Amino acid sequence: MRDAIVKAARAWIGTPYVHQASARGAGTDCLGLVRGVWRELYGDEPELLPAYTPDWGEMLGEELLIGGARRLLLTSDIEAAGDVLIFRMRSGVIAKHMGILAQIGDRATFIHSYDRRGVVESPLSIPWRSRIAGRFRFPPLN
Image (cartoon, rainbow, N blue to C red; front, side, top):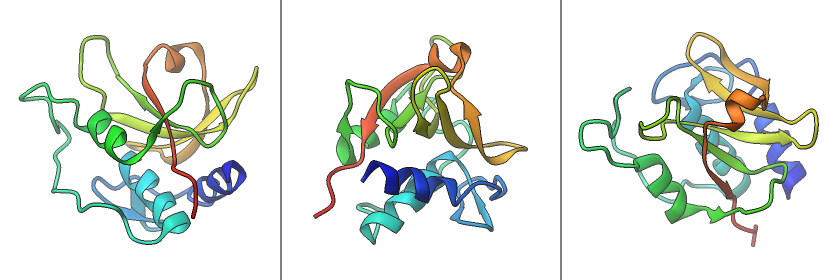
C-alpha cells in the first residue's frame, strides 16, 4: 500500500502549481495533490471541498486542513513512507501546507506542490521537519 501511495504521488512530479486545482499534469496545489492520490487509490473523493482562498482558515484561526485530515485519514505516530505530512509555515499560524512522505531515514524526502515550483520531491530537512503539525496515513484499501 505504501509503495502504491509513493508511486502515485511521484507520478504527479512536474505538475504545475495551480491554486485549488487537482489534475495531474495540468495543475494542482498541495491539497489537490493529496486529493488526486486519494482518487487514484480509492476512486471518488470522500467529501466535496468548498472553494478556498490562499488565506483559508486564517480569519477565524481554524485548523481546517488538520480537521479534514482527522476526519478522513488515520493519525500516524511512526514515520513511514506514504504518510501525509501537514506543515505550519511559521510558528503560531494555522497549518496550510501538506505533502506525502516518499522516503524515510537520513535521506528522507516528501512530495508536495509549491507555489512557483509545482509538484516536486524535496528533502525533509530540519527546517521542514520543524514545521510538521501533523502526520496522517491513508486508510487501508478494501
